[in-house]
Image 1 (tube, rainbow, N blue to C red):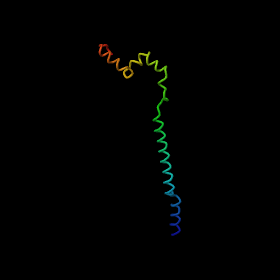
Image 2 (tube, rainbow, N blue to C red):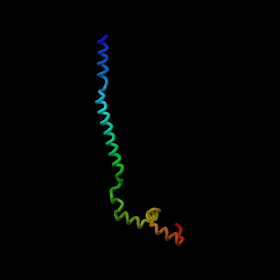
Image 3 (cartoon, one colour):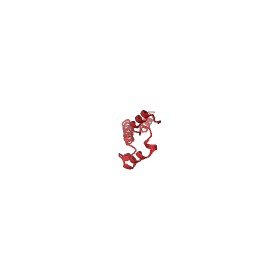
Image 4 (spheres, rainbow, N blue to C red):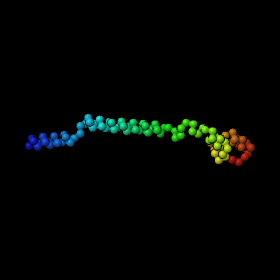
Length: 91
């Protein structure tokens, strides 16, 4: 009977993982996911367009001459709004 118990014990021990090896693999996986998340956060913090993309002269000139772009709220000169309010012009 002792032989059967020894055989079963060895079989179970062979099928089980080494706890230290399991912990090492788990830590490696967690650190890899953490590094990937940090990289993703860094990529999300980048602007969609490179620095200076919206500051070239053609775009600035278009802001001045295109009425649809230049007269929208937020792009208008705030002093223009004050002047229109003071003279009674409709917006």
